[in-house]
Image 1 (cartoon, rainbow, N blue to C red):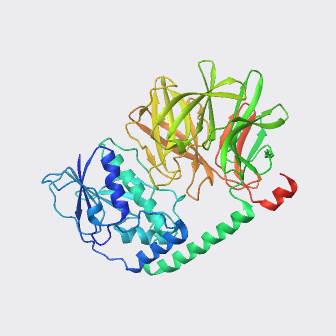
Image 2 (image 1 turned 180 degrees about the horizontal axis):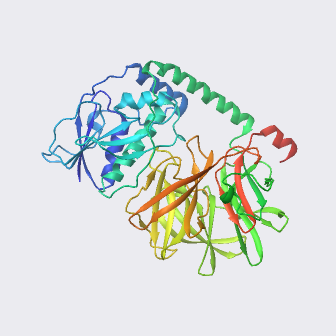
Image 3 (image 1 turned 90 degrees about the horizontal axis):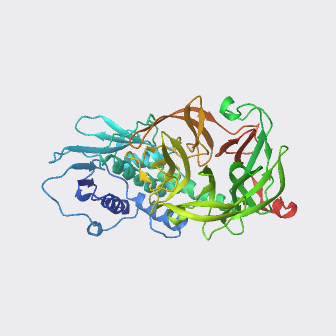
Length: 495
């Protein structure tokens, strides 16, 4: 497909070069046309971006950096193009094309609209509007994990805008996203104060991390005879207990399995002194944890989210190892503490929280995918295969969702009255803030749809803030959360 990007010549930013490369990597021919925007942004904004680059990113490159127009590796103009993507707020101009779309940010077009929406305190809803019919044909709502400062937020927003555009260039109908854009935005004149407040928060976060372990995840568990969270849609019922972590470490992402007469909970364990996660475990009996925590899988890279699946009489694990650009399958050779690498399911992809289910005779692997400096909890991709070991093929609608509130997996799939459900991380108020329960209403290699039914938030019933994993095994229910953990307290009491 031949794509023409229309951008403002006064703002040739690095994200435009990244957009060109991303679309080229997807197999498209990309041209650039420089079109003057209808509105202007004060020159001091680039000075604010430069200040954030120095103070927040130690001078590292950012997508808001200005670049030379001739350094953007676009293709030469051609008389005929397939689609125009207009990033400006200038009136639509005629083009020899069958499709003309424009990204909107909380309902308005252009960089000024994107910035003033961010200044209101949140990432805006992205919409793609057909400039011929005026119809909105896709939406996305990016997450904020990497939106550090005004420039970082704008960079992440544009990366995810390109993600949404690429998804629509395939011509495959998209799953609907029912999220309404906010009308909130603030005048560009508040940008200096916004940046200054961001720098102050950056310093305060550094002080907090100097005084406390951050984050400090911990695991909750309980035995319950009813359906637990899946029945009440909250954390009420039998009391929760906290699994005591080892000194200087946190514990998160619990998954439980019973095998050879033993029940074991596997989880991510991160040593703050090292800064890298491993997979550890602890055995449970009918009263609770027994014995000590022990390590089961350690690699040179960070590991987390030890998804477990029994298949073909074997026990398998797919821990998150997104830093490697692979999704790796491990086989248990001695339960519970010996595992060997068995296969690479996917490569060349940054995918987190791989979660597998079987449906209508196929295996489906769900996970959030990341590109560049986009958020890491907002973009759901699905792959399918005839066997657990693959080969795994991408879903026709990938990425099937760009939605920070309903994308990221939060634990095992669940069958309820013959219907398939999945817990998802609701990151609309930040990473790992809450869990939602979603019913999958359609799942095939070419179609996906889910409906969010319930929202589960942290409460006084659970001794911790945040909530981002929910799993159940028989009477045993496990979750996780965070708490404030001063470093001095941990040192003195070894807890």
